[in-house]
Length: 158
Ligand SMILES: Cc1cc2nc3c(=O)[nH]c(=O)nc-3n(C[C@H](O)[C@H](O)[C@H](O)COP(=O)(O)O)c2cc1C
Image (cartoon, rainbow, N blue to C red; front, side, top):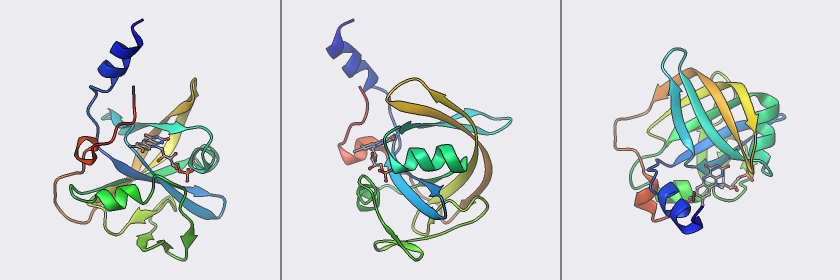
């Protein structure tokens, strides 16, 4: 296989950019990721790709729940805040406020909308695990255009 062609072609997949939250023991954690897609209508399933050597992966695997926060176009700073591990203090990650709903996974107050999943399958094949979750709760804070990976100028894929 032509490695450069593989990279270019895979980078042709278009993405949004989301803050994915989970529970880690009694605590919560969140990271920014773009490997997110709906995978079924009935039941409503969502697939995410999660790096295996991260706190978030351990949390999702063990708690079997995660949240996906849909960011708004222009909320690059919010996305950038979760590319590195972030400590939680009370109901905040730094300046970023969150609350919890059905699963206990963090929901960002400033996100456009959110949904929470119960993990149904963990497929462990590569450096990231493919995690399938059934959507069991959702909410909308306001209408707006979702943030895309292209808008940030970043790539994660190839
Ligand atoms: C543009 C971009 C997109 C990313 N997308 C993902 C992703 O889809 N899945 C993932 O596991 N990590 C992704 N990451 C890496 C995580 O944000 C990073 O590993 C994070 O520190 C994990 O947090 P944690 O260590 O607190 O769990 C991405 C990083 C960047 C810069």
